[in-house]
Length: 159
Image (tube, rainbow, N blue to C red; front, side, top):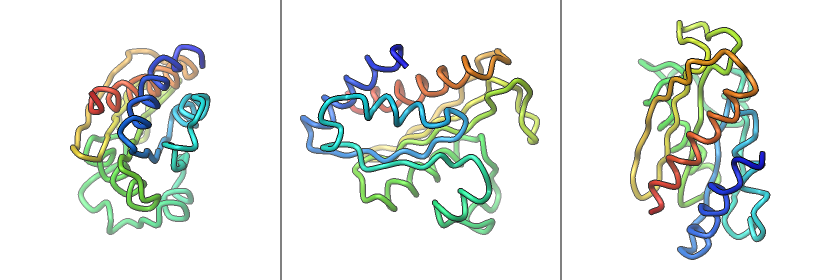
């Protein structure tokens, strides 16, 4: 997790100085984004909470979303990442919502995305998303790279 801390510290400082908060919806990073942010001293001033939305049960139970809410989209896409960022932001009454959704490996997902495919989205004062392809099948390494991609996108939007 050490490699995530520089991003998390920068984000924490920016959010604290602005009096803003963050809520996280992560999937294939398995909680690494939240762990990094919570490692920052004073996280309680900016961190609202998170959900690891890895299964349909979490999608319905924690996010309160159903099939009609994602009509025309699927997970591991930029529109889905923005929807999930927007939803967690609203649910936890945060200034910003951040989402990571991808296929960590060692194989791809059921939609045809290869291992190492991730989409990250951030919603707040602005809405942005991007797709990253690591080209790796190493599940653990992809988890860290996915968390880095999400934290990097958030950091960019806070600058």
